[in-house]
Image (cartoon, rainbow, N blue to C red; front, side, top):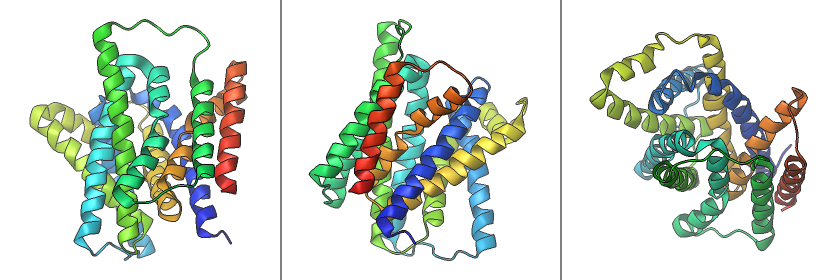
Length: 299
């Protein structure tokens, strides 16, 4: 049996794994759907899967307090609707390498928001693990060759979007923890409320300004390889968000977010088995991140 702390960290590791696998699959659809369309499509499908699972498992551990609903809805709007959209916008403007480096601020931001919103403090040992893991991820994902040049306008927009994504995702994580702390509920109900809130917000915006994009997001018309899209949604959004909220329920959100941040390293490890080139920086960064996660597990 796992104790609560160990269970939370185990769920965080599983969440990072399924998110890494889904990222590889989602890449194939990023050129066919806009960021907001992708947000709607995956949100609607994953929400439907969650509803079916709740019915099959007869999970009635739904939140009953208004405060809990407000925490989850706000976390969904900020973390998923705004945070994910800003993340996709950053990818388009400055590319994945720069975006992921800025995203590595998220674990520290979660720790700060955890103090401000929930008055919960981490030990110095835990902060050391977070710092070590974050530095390792930054070193590993930094490309060996020079990055493509970006004009000043796109660079400023991209950096601001990446910062907004890190801040919003950190806030969303802490708000979800606030709801889970408020009363006893299942992590699947928490995941559904958060996902549905964020998806509905994006859907309303797209439907108001570009109804044709909204229809394509719902029907996936003209998109090939739909079965792989369903696999990506099942892994990354359905299982990923469920595991993520489970991790947040049983451990500190800053620790959970730090472990989630190792997902790019998992992607690189998959690339290694596919015989893609591996640099010394990737190995060093991966080792540091692994030691940092070990510190968190020991904490």
